[in-house]
Length: 300
Image 1 (cartoon, rainbow, N blue to C red):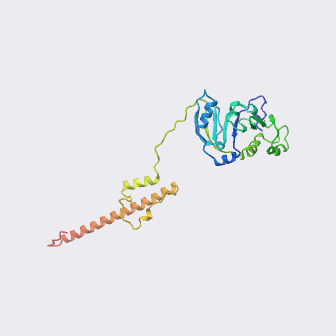
Image 2: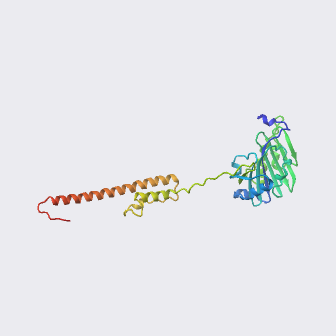
């Protein structure tokens, strides 16, 4: 077992703390819809919470599939009836003692808190209704920091397990997906959030590249320059064989088709040129043959 699991109870334990503010009866429906977060909500919220600190945007990404927030970073998602804030706290042993400005950041009748240790086995859950803690549990594998309120029904199977020595019969972080499934309607809530930094870092600079040309545009422009575009190509009964319909093809197929079509078109042009040259040569030879005859008067 990781030695950090046996940390002294007095040692601060950092953790990523995620707080859900819920004022809808169906949070799972909002989560399942995966709406885009309100771009202005998070900045206004953090500017209100930290009025003396500049707030800069990091980017937009899925909450459940992104790197954990660092010091001074906040991931915020604001949706109708649902708000989520995730951040890194230096000490998250006691969820009932979280900063008031975080727990009260958004007015909501139901607030759910989840903590996941970054350097230890710390895990915790909390349920707050109308500002009152209904259930709080926070522990490492071998030490319980908080355990107030009656265990909820989803916890019973965990407590019924056989304990191993002095350790709990379960890993505290195991409660998190079970609590999320009970309180939010999904064991792994994943919504798009906007990351913000409150450590004074500048906004990331965005370099705008010129718009990329599509393969069809490249084909058209190249064909015009080569003289094989449809506007100046000679009539060909088999032209339809080289007309490209690339709208629904993947990029690799487009390039293969373009190469094939260009090759066929060039071959036709070369064949026509050779044919024209042969015809001119034959006529010239015929004229020379008549000119060699005595008394020839042909002028055409």
